[in-house]
Length: 149
Image (cartoon, rainbow, N blue to C red; front, side):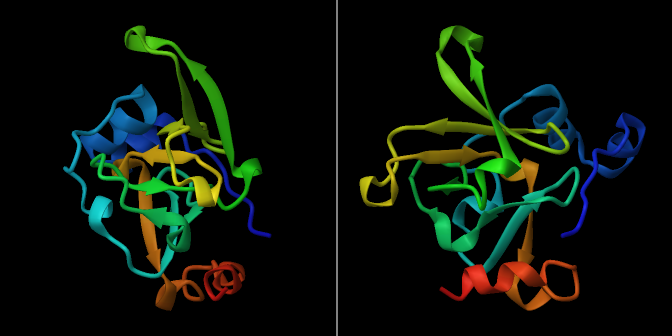
């Protein structure tokens, strides 16, 4: 298993766009329907843009109509943290990456019931998509079998 790590703030500031930095490091939310991943349904995995740690499978992605990439579950519960978020007068559950502690989005209970009822509403700016054809070259071979089910 590959080991992932959190990069320094200086490294991240150099590598991330202003939007990616604001979302992952300052808990911002991108505008709905503003990211290409909202409507992307190619076969592959979504990884944490700050660490490369695998987070979501394309086979668990669906169109929730909310304007952000939505998933029914993470690859593994061990890859994310769920934290109570009472900002802006709402009571929500924030989703953060486990290793890099990057803000990803929120999880809600209005997802497809047949898939467990959860909607992981994730900022596209917090993710990087790795196409199925590139999994071997990018070191994610072990995830191919999960996409072939």
